[in-house]
Image: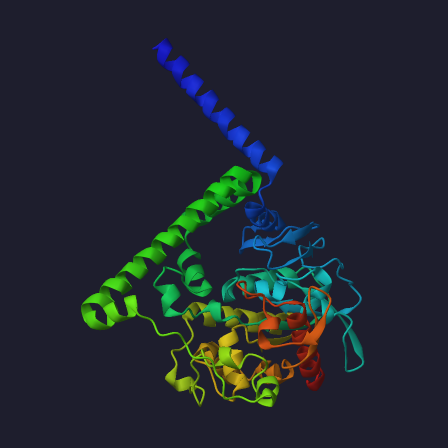
Length: 418
């Protein structure tokens, strides 16, 4: 028996020492592939009401693992993106939304919300505060808004940016097990066991670099397995439904022909500098009617109603904003057509119209994207195309993308009666 305990104790000590060595090695070498995830993790904090918030008084230089973007990420004492503290004597304009609003992809001063700071509307100067946090759905946004407005004074208007991932998800991603944020929130809202386990793993992976790396590897493995299974099912289905076509496409693929029938003028002015890309996106001549689309999920409606009630209680103007976040939607609009990926905005706008609440739509400002001068990373000045407004492979707004949003919002906000 004593021998057993000695061996068990030795095994425990060796295991603990090994884990400590791995933890120390990860912290010391700080591998670039993991550094981005570690920095992002440390920028966040657990919140008992809505899961995740931003860590107050934090400042980190974040560099994307693929080199797609880098920038300074700072939070104030309330865990809001940016250096400025709320001024109790100044009227406030709040930006509410997910990572696009929070400003992944650029430094603090380059986020579109930061660029709205000091905006004068109807003779009154506004302080703009960014209360966005990544990975929020509608319910998380409603809870975040309640939390922040309870800590702020003189909130006059809230810009609520609605994301397509809140309540819609392309079938190809849904088949991989990825659900819209609102559906995920509905599953976990009353699950106390899940919330407890989430809290434990969040704090554990925040403390330990090794546990975070382990969790990241596990999650990526799950995604790859799901993708492989879906791909295998598709291959098998194609093989049995149309074997001749399957064999032909497997061994002989005709390369896509480039578009060569456009003049230089059409290339530069009509569809931005990327006409060949525009042809790859399926577009329709007319947008879908609201009646032909499914209604909003109950959890989404409940979250919207919660925000409306809060706006009446706190006496501020709630303004939903539809920011085109998918290039397919933008390319189709640039051609005078519509993308089915924009149906989410039609669904949501139908709800807000019935509530007689004004919305802001930024899709008409797409025409101002084409040919706008901007400075590249190498310092050269050239004309921008649609792709220059979004970070490749990441989807967040670039510096010029944030500037485009802020310019469009300034015009829209000055139109309103306040």
